[in-house]
Every structure is written in structure tokens, then in C-alpha cells.
Length: 166
Image (cartoon, rainbow, N blue to C red; front, top):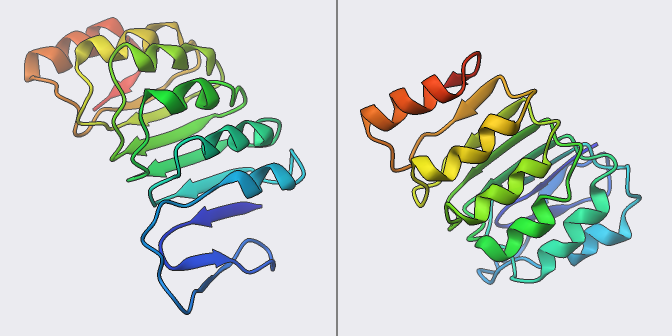
């Protein structure tokens, strides 16, 4: 089952669909409810809303089943990365609108099953993608919005032969 968490919507309990909420809350979403789900019940998760700091630890509970993850405009920082690095079965991940550092994302080397990674963060430079060389299954690396010059992009492509970088 896939689960989406975005503004003005909530899980309706029927196959992962969402329903519009009667009122819109603009405070960050608390995702601690995820640890109440069976650990292998969610294969895809998309969060497109700010997440309450500290509540992301519950995401690690879904590691056995989670294969796809989108974190868009979640306002996450390096504090979240140890929890994300525990999602060892992820094959596909897209992230943008967060505040990860070059040093922080090196923890993502633990995600050895990633074949598609879209780390499209404006806070990252060429140094941030050093860990990608150790992801043996990686075939696509999306770097849109990252602080990369044309020269940096050429260097990254040279460092990752066989990986579609762009």
C-alpha cells in the first residue's frame, strides 16, 4: 500500500486514499502514528508537508516494507538523516525542499539498495554527493536544484560511470 501525507488531507482507512480535511492546519505534521502500522504494510510513502522535528523516528518502523519515499518541502535537517539511513530497503527516493548539509547526507551510504536517488536539495554541493560512489546499485541520480556548476556536474558524471546524472 502507498500512503500520502500532504496539506489538508488525511488517511481515510480505505486502501491508502486520502480525503480532504474540513479544516487546514498549517503546523508541521506529526508522523508518529506510522509506528502503529504493521512494519511491512507500506511500500511507498510520500510526505509533501513540513514534518514535526523528532517525529520522523517513527519512519524507521516501516523499514522492512518501504521501497519508495518522497520527502518534498518537509523542512527536514540533518537531524532526520540517521532515521532515514535506517530505511535499508529503499530502492527509490526523492527529496527536495529540505535543509540537508553535504556532511550530513554522507550517512545515506547505508542505503545500499537505492537504484534511483533524486537528492534535489539547494543546500548541497558537489561534496555532498561523495557517498553516491559507494551505492553499487545506483543507476539514476537526480541533482536538480543542487548547487552544482556545469563543471561540477561533469565531474560528478565522471565519478559515477554508468549512472544517469542530471
